[in-house]
Length: 338
Image 1: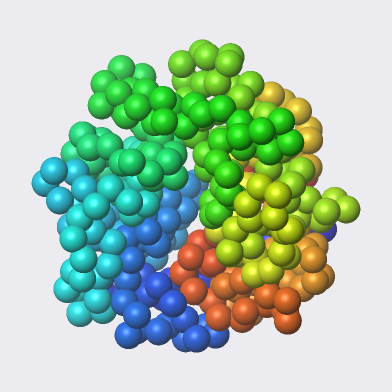
Image 2 (image 1 turned 180 degrees about the vertical axis):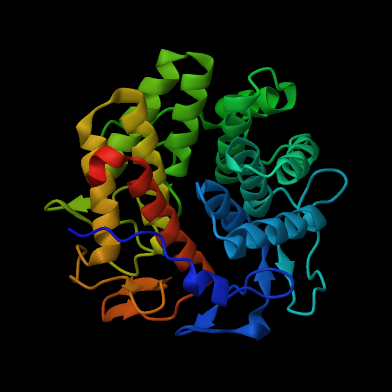
């Protein structure tokens, strides 16, 4: 399987004066739908992960940082919806947009080479980490940011306190012996939950948390694999005891699984996780339930979903960023792609 390098052309074509356009009709931005903090946080994450970003990508990272700082309330919560005019359309919350912002700030602190960007990210992370979310996924995203901070600043107390709180929320028993998951339903970005728990376990040297996270991730991977091909949880989710529908599958689920499998591989050195990463990459390349590529080689954009009729060929920001993040993981784990 040929693994392409991350191609930022389409993402850059979605760039706007205030952020990244959330939706596209095929490859054309849907300006009327404006921006969301969730996607801008993802922009900062993938841009920060680039070891030698082009000036266009580096500039996009700076713009994303400005957006996320403006989205942040002085109490640490974040707004999510912004019109193409720059007007904010909602009130601050600790929903996913808050958690993803903290993940982005932490990634910028640990990966970017720009001192000003690191300083901005550090200040914004400190502000955002003062609050907590009642939502496990938001806390999981925030935990991943805290781990990034602690990887370069082990004594950072705000990051440590947030990670402790996140681990306490995510450290939940499996629902049942045949449903090795802490929730009665699989929904979206599922792998972020065991990944955050695994990261916390490694940071704290807690073998019990590590074992629990790896058990959940193994079960999730097995439940999302059919005949060695990835069949991820569809957009409607699936509950315990329910028949699992195949469609519509979304790139965000694949990207979350890729991130988690790379972390598990680095912790365990077990090649099964490298094989799982290749399955995630393969899903985009056409090794999926329909044998259809999930990206446009001519633009670098990712398709919005795999439906029963084939790919949804709209190339929105979320799907394109999921493709880029997965290809970045494949590139970083050089022994997989060599």
